[in-house]
Length: 339
Ligand SMILES: Nc1ncnc2[nH]cnc12
Ligand SMILES: [Zn+2]
Image (cartoon, rainbow, N blue to C red):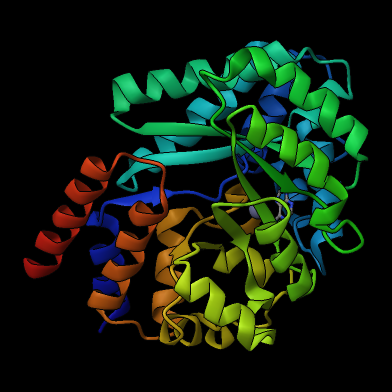
């Protein structure tokens, strides 16, 4: 199939984003604008110079720049503007539903009130639902390079907002910070009624995926690439229909893989894994949902039916109601028949 026809097929396909760090959507132009209005300087002369710094050899090199970029977010309106910019962008890409991460400790550790972060993001999500028709769920991530005591403090801050935050997640530097380090705070979050997800097997070993399943009781694994090292784990993930929220351009930019052509997506699909496609940190990795879908579809020469399956998997793996899931799955089936 011609690249242009794959791209236009993907553009019109209803999609859902389940692995997206809102601080990872911070485009350089907006970063300079917000830094200026907060009288803060960015240690780069201009947008182009900043973009040139976006070349990474591993996750940590990215995280260092990602946290530095987030440090210009100060006021509630900054978090609103960041989120609204993301929603308008993905509205153009036919994204119907988003379940996104935010990293409160990145901001509260800079003495930004938790409420500024939450209210700014949430107000934009509500506006996105009302004005753009994009439904949403919000996930609060614990930073795994910090200790569990800090995660407990963050969970405490979230308790009054259970109506706004549906789940907790685990992100940041993976190797050396196994899920087991956070089993108590996840246990408490589960008791408080939160769902749980976790980054596991991005750079960390497949043991981290086992721990996320058994100790954090996750309903999804974020990334999960290293599951392929462990046949027993593959079997379990398939049996349990445990979603893996894959991010091809992220894995490419962070050198988890060297070329999209070697992305093990087809192997995962052959093992009947419930794999989904997402953008992780699109401002840093060069693409949103459509670019992730078309990048992997072109590299692996996927058929329209395989692309449609990936989009349907996203809705299946979401926390939408069964009725809404079915509606989107039928919409995709009809779209496939007519394109
Ligand atoms: N890909 C990623 N892995 C871990 N932590 C992150 N925070 C933002 N993006 C991340
Ligand atoms: Zn991520």
